[in-house]
Image 1 (tube, each protein chain N blue to C red):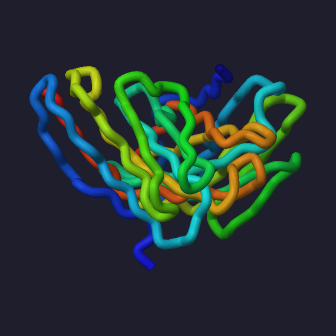
Image 2: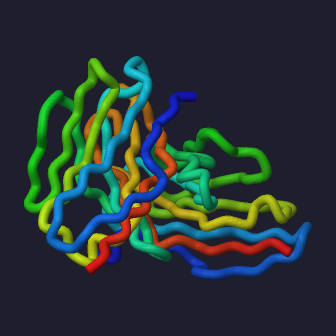
Length: 110
Length: 115
């Protein structure tokens, strides 16, 4: 199957900016999702990119480069509540399945 | 709207026992999915359904069966539980399939331990 790679853990300071990267095989997916998952809770939708470029949604932005098989999630003005796992997931064209990366656990420290 | 609900929230089984996990959604979504999430493995698709009366295998279907008798419900069955099935199980639903930009909405999860 298609691999999706993202860092296992990251730490950032409250108020700062953090970028979480996600890479995948370019032939695999039609679009990229980002989900947030707090410990012990369900994943919740953050963003979806199907075209190249940056999508901004409040403090969160997501970028996609299909030719490079690369996406990132940018979190600005970090808050303690942003401490969570961030899941990158690829969606195949016409496919019913999402392929998830293993998630990046972000810890926001004071 | 309750969204996606799952019952039970927690369950402990002995090896060889059977059980059924229930997923319900009130969003009139066509597509429903069952995932398992294990430490260091990410979310993996077990089975999915593209409509009432249909089911299909995902990435890790062995040891599980599913049924979609009603559009709003998707059941996951374990006929003979094994310790390897200890996991957190998430149900999800979407209006259309994710390749067409639709979002999957997740239930709160069922934490299953098999002894």
